[in-house]
Length: 351
Image (cartoon, helix red, strand yellow):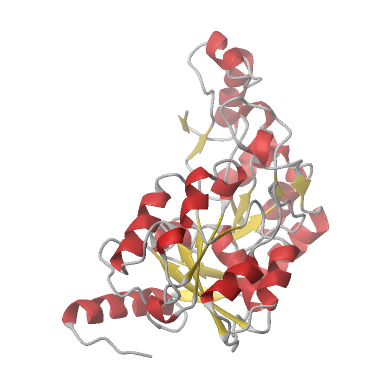
């Protein structure tokens, strides 16, 4: 591994090293494979470390015995891009795997490629360039630009099919052979019943040192402005026993938990999970609340978790607009949610 040779590189090296030193790993992620894969989240460490895609990919890729996957995050101030797992520079990796979830993050993908003088269009790359793999939420619904950039684009959830292809890659293969090995014939996005959870926690994450548990994926609602109900597949939920046992197993490390789903209040066992958190004294937060599905138990659990406010989404200032969006809520639903919040000790609400 090349060591920094100038002050700017040393500053970057020390920043990455400092962030890494504050992480606490829940699961052992050591890997000694010969196929080196850079897992690049094209946004800040604070955002990327809070994305369960980072955790799932790190775990699943490193379970492939021949693979050694390491994390990278985006910063405008970075030039070398050191791995958050071994402090190895990015340009020593053969496969660059980008997890793209937001349109604006594509600009950061372009910036990273430009910094290393890698052509943005896959047709213009040569045998010395890394293999650029693209996945993430954007592949569910927007592939035109991704197909121009990615040598390989994996649509939808991480699939066993792709992991099987990855296990067939040999570190002695040429760039063209790696691309051919990773390319599948899949046309529609893949949908997986496997739900993710945190591999590590960090106080520098936007969610702090909360342990994140994905309790659901997909959505049965068809709000017109939202991709989840139209492209993310049928709802898949984590079982109640699995959820509570996962919390209990991690509680010696942290008692702060975050539940992740397209709509957490659509989780069939949300009441039981909230009651479990109240009973055990766990701090609970949620990624989303649907205001017509709120309950006293859930709001009580959130209030006991020292939250001073909660967020609801009317999505429109008039019933006509809400109906046009197919949101499926009424003014009465909004007033009921506010009353429930006040009854449970909340004095502030975000809309």
